[in-house]
Length: 131
Image (cartoon, rainbow, N blue to C red):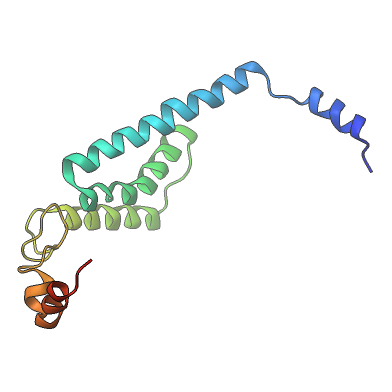
């Protein structure tokens, strides 16, 4: 069993160096926060449904970088999956291509009339009760 003094000496020996802590801070601020800001601006520009498609392309980019940077081998199954991902992304983001319901705005289905008009009992209950 380790004594408290032994644990303290191990902590001092293996404390992260300044460069490692600065690298961690850089990853947190530049990569994570920057990525969120860019993604939120994408959501504001194209809407949440279309912006979420980028998450489907991420595995294909990771495989391509693995092959290009690390020399990993790309198999025919990976190429088929890449094609499927791209085709699905194109189908999901095409404007008015039937992928979204009629009356859709920004990839989100919008009903033709409010719920209270479609369900008369719901409309009466909403007007009969006071909040």
